[in-house]
Amino acid sequence: MSEQTQAKENEQDNPQEAVEQEQASEQQAQGEDNSAEAEIAALHAELEAAKQTIEDQKDSVVRAAAEVENIRRRAAQDVDKAHKFALEKFAGDLLPVLDNLERAIEFADKDNEAIKPMLEGVEMTAKSFVEALGKFNVEVVEPQGETFNPDLHQAMSMQPSEDVAPNTVLAVMQKGYTLNGRLLRPAMVMVSKAP
Image (cartoon, rainbow, N blue to C red; front, top):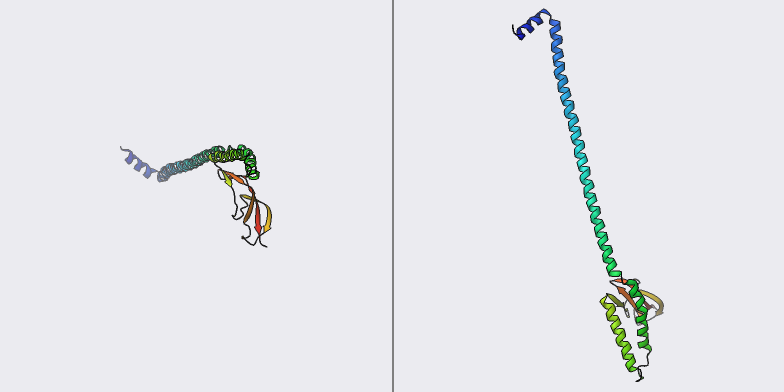
């Protein structure tokens, strides 16, 4: 006798038992479905967590790369500034020497034949000094007749003047200098004001 025939006979002998077996097999099938769904849901949650971790790691890598690039750029700028302005103190210390040479030329007795050769030598020395400073990007700020610029000039006095517009440099008492565009020493000037 086959199993199906025997099951039918058992059903007819005990209908209550047959219903219970059928419910048990349905519950077992549902339980398997529920456990499969729960496992799928758990795997899906793990997958989403892994994806989030990957995104976080990508973000961290991008931020780290950007930080390294910023550090490189800052270091390059620092090296560039060190090259450009390494001579700042040295050049600043040489400026009074140039000032003294120019004063010697300005106040020398140009009519005295005995000192003309010496005066020419001092003028040539001052000229070569300015050229040497120019090779290292030290430039003169001589604002005679220009508008007063507080970034480059230092006003020593103000004088009323009808000949020029207010805030015009009337006289330069001491030349200023820049090194690669950075102010080494401001020009000391006299500035006009309205009468």
